[in-house]
Length: 449
Ligand SMILES: Nc1ncnc2c1ncn2[C@@H]1O[C@H](COP(=O)(O)OP(=O)(O)O)[C@@H](O)[C@H]1O
Ligand SMILES: N[C@@H](CC(=O)OP(=O)(O)O)C(=O)O
Image (cartoon, rainbow, N blue to C red; front, side, top):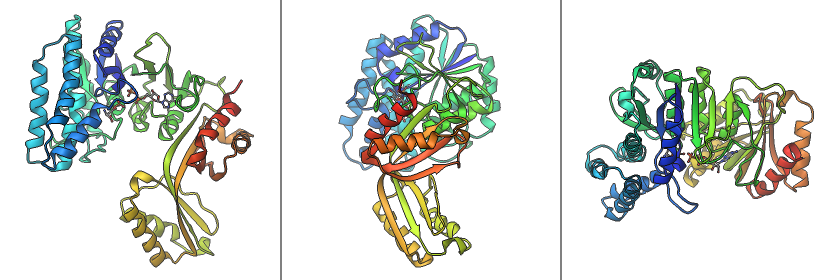
């Protein structure tokens, strides 16, 4: 049995959903179909999930929301028309939305329920369409499927008891069409995963039913060696390991959610990234072991939006508990950190900007001054991280030198290097403005002809 997950671009309109129909029909082993909410149809379009969030932000403040609701309903209505399926489904979607807006739950719970409408409606539309082309398909709610999650709105984690529940689905006769992106707590409360989390649902279902393959259908032929929006026509990656993909997704390869690998990895289920618009292309296989003939560096990922908190104090190395106290101050403000490179008298902590409002920055700086008495403390916003990834990278001579030469050639100053903490990557911190020079230069150094 295979699990096929289709991302937002694959359910963006009726034409795309017809392609899903052909893909499912072409392989009877594709028994589990996971779908996202309708994504962007073109560059300037808005994803359904963002439309639903905008609706919630307005409606929960008791502001007039009918215009927002109409935009959402028009998108679903277009898809219904294009697929020539029964419009009765539209009334259900509208009623569900209005019921959520008017219920007495907290805004946070209502927002999660609203966000789930995109995936939930998509699954209903896709299953109805699959029936019209003669497939024995059925919508399956994540609660009935057994996707049991933690009580963390917007950031739910899968609970281990889900897997034995999901295993029972192997008996399922029909093709199960399951909405991605959300599950239910043991108490029956709906919780979404973090953004992009339909990939996580696919991986969980694949692990639960012990699928022979998890296919992740998107809008590119493969995972590329660099983000194709930074370097045009980059080389494709044919195979990479779970560990490599996890690092690359974490560091900016948005094609696959970084938390989606673990369930598949634990059950050793291969993952294949494929293109809905070109399903005959072989795609990228994510597997356990590196192919021995493959080059050491597999990809270069990057992302903006980091800050570095730099603290220096003479004899910091002799002060027992300094690092712990610093990290505890961040913990009190509910801030997690990404990296923490340190020297004898210095420590830097790299934080995602999304975690750090100006008010929080002030609180943290004041507390560090009061409690740790540093010689110097600075916040450096506008940092970008670059991750050069490949199994065996740390034990291969010359990788760091090649990278630093490429960065120098691109006139990019290196603010920070972290090599060795991870077995499969070397990380560079640079100023964001240099990213568009750094990546092409690194790409040429590692993958140029
Ligand atoms: N290294 C990479 N290889 C392939 N795609 C990448 C890479 N880095 C970023 N992407 C982007 O990921 C996009 C696909 O992911 P996403 O938008 O989440 O798709 P979906 O709509 O299927 O969920 C691609 O269109 C591409 O722009
Ligand atoms: N629709 C959700 C979940 C998701 O996985 O979407 P996509 O497959 O379009 O990345 C989001 O936008 O976050």
